[in-house]
Image (cartoon, rainbow, N blue to C red; front, side, top):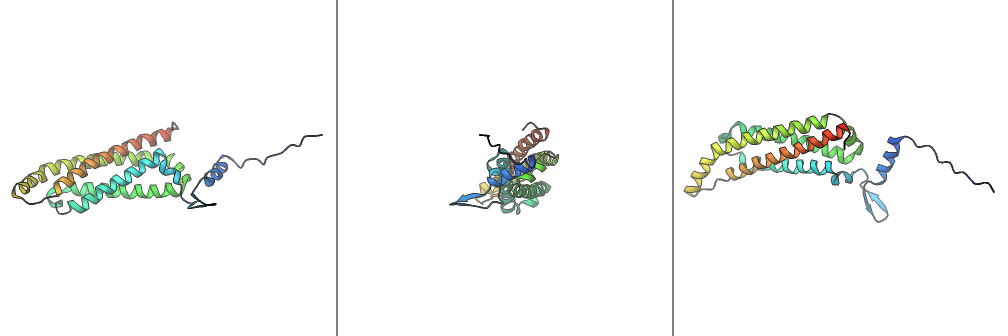
Length: 193
């Protein structure tokens, strides 16, 4: 008896096969169907997703603290306050857009990550956050600390000094996280990851 040969249709190319695989694992399974299939939830548990989430949360924390506790002391701190707020706002907005795009489209993540954009963006964010944090730290310790001591001895409450101290420490941490993301993006660009 002759054996039957089963012929498989040719693959539609590596991009198409990966695209189908990608779609099959997306979304959240509820009962017998998948919902939120447009969301790439696997990105959030990846190394790159965790870094982007840290950058977003820490940047949001810095901006919230600046606006809530630093506006009254902005005239005392001077340009260090406005420089840090500008740095924080710019990179927070761009990181939010990148995270949103990467969450919706895995293909966008692979295309952007293979370009030089992520390396330059993360490197610039690292340098800007570290320099803005050190400038804010200098201004806080020179201009706010004496007022904090004066209010402390006279019994008044002056919450700007501890809040701005937390902001420049947290800004340094955000700068380091962006530095790690720069390294990871560079390795991805060169094909090591």
